[in-house]
Figure: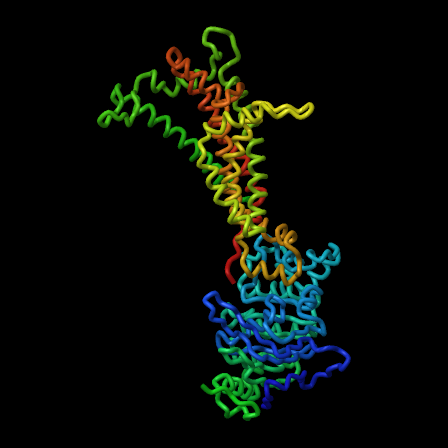
Length: 291
Length: 294
């Protein structure tokens, strides 16, 4: 297990060829976010965050509640604007990237429109962006097959289980073949068994689409199982404490057996120790917050 | 809905049963109640049971199949009532339509601009506290001054306007709640698609407002019918149910069953209006599905 200082801020994707000409999928530099409250007590949600994510890389953000991991995701998605610093997505500003549909997004709630069929939900972004009917149908069929819901195309969301709804949401986020997927605890509301199955599927889907992923989660095993790198964050103010590289091999090789492998456990321990602020697993390259 | 075969029959039977029970209660009280009515102190709480105050149900029904003026050979009562009913229904429909359009527009403006909500909402609520009888003559007077080329304001338009005045209120309130009902989640999703307010309105807010809108439309229909009947009386528009009720009430002395005919007519108008809204609801079934939480 190797760990590296948070501020290194450079694309590190072990075993992956990083084409030098391509800009980073996400480049966060010196970003801070302060929420002004009415009582005059400002809340610093994020402080001096640097993070670079290579194309095709899977990065998880993990940390206790209030550490700003969701805020960071929302800043990348341009659903909020940073108070300081800059964010680039594929070399463009976050705002331009949103306008150009450079990313797809999935939230904890599937957020499907209940009056649309599964297929129509997946086609929603395409429809909004004036993609022709035939192209839409072809693309949604492809995505339905990808998430294994071809038989449910004409069902409505309320006829689906939570896991299936979430799979539809993931298919929808992939509709416009984005190079970046932003996921905010997409499996947070699912039961453990469904959750593990969804993780395995997500790994496969990401391998097939080649998209970079920023994945917010509370779960250490989830972060380790999915990621190339796990970004450990600490709260008040939210900042990056550690970036832990997880070397579990290429996505194709990840299956249920991996969950019982030693390398998996080692990575889990490393993330755990970093989360709990112990220096054992993390060489003190950067001062660990102890308070 | 496809599997409504037996439940539909059941509901119709229950509806008929309700009418039968009502008629039975009427006749039972008429047979057993005191002739002078039930009084508490000076207050009459239940009506007198004389044939004048409470005609037999069968007399009222039979009256429908006799000519309007008992002596003459006019058209039959039910025909006259039906004609008046359709006239009133037509006026109420115009009022309902105008009310729905105005209510929707107000709701959309209020959803779009927060300041508009603060500025308009109190007035919308206040508007409903003005008694109908107070505005009817005003509307008639203002209307009579309107004359644009070929177009001249007619009395039925005043009635429709007053009906719409009552109809727009529930629509604007219901639609506003409905337009604001989508989750933050959905609104942000539309933002990530970088589509504007208009597309969000069409694809998200309007469909999401349907469950709130349908009860509002039903209320608006009931309000439009009441508004039409009352306004017909206060404006003095001939041809509709409202005027008929007043006219026939004058004949109650010699022909006690007669005033009940237009009242049945008013009930029919109300039922038809509710039926039309139910059909609209049926057409919008797919917007009424609830998403089960993940």
